[in-house]
Image (tube, rainbow, N blue to C red; front, top):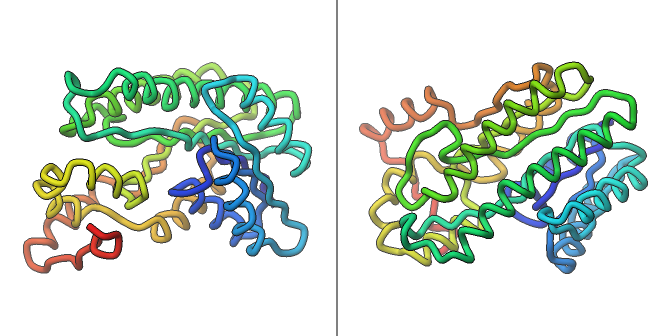
Length: 269
């Protein structure tokens, strides 16, 4: 049984991963900034607990290192130890060009996406080394991490590109330890954040809807794949990608002959 910590997991892909780990028989500690969100998520996740599994949660602002340390200590105490740490907490604001993004949103993306992940990696690496055993740290990347450009994602993509470099550097610095570092690209998943962005910029969403419909997936489709890949992960520095080049090419080719059912209708879009 593995013991997993997931940040930003009161909803979205983080919550979906927590559900899947529990379904596969593992223990999970989740974290998010809002106390009620954490409480509600833990209550729902507890319905999946069987046997000796544990599930717990703690509020945590990942931009504050002391709170991240407190999360580690809480998880290690309740679960017994931490085997896998997933830096999932992130923020995407994709409705503006670089020049038009409000300064507060720029600072929020930089601090949550980059500083939050750096804090998580530093705390988890130190904790795993202190445990004296093997461990895995995964950083959730996203659009822009490979250097590709998407309209409206100039700032967000920059943070993810930076995290790719940071993850590579961490791999090298931990090469003489039993800690593995992995990078995850979950693809284009329909979450509350995606729906919010679409509603904020309906014209932009309308322009990209047809293309996105061919590429998006639901959390319940992607989470099992990601969990299985993380559990069997053995080579530090490798990337776990759901929506790889081959899959993108096949879906776009297939769309020429058969229209994929509307993936957004169930979300009020």
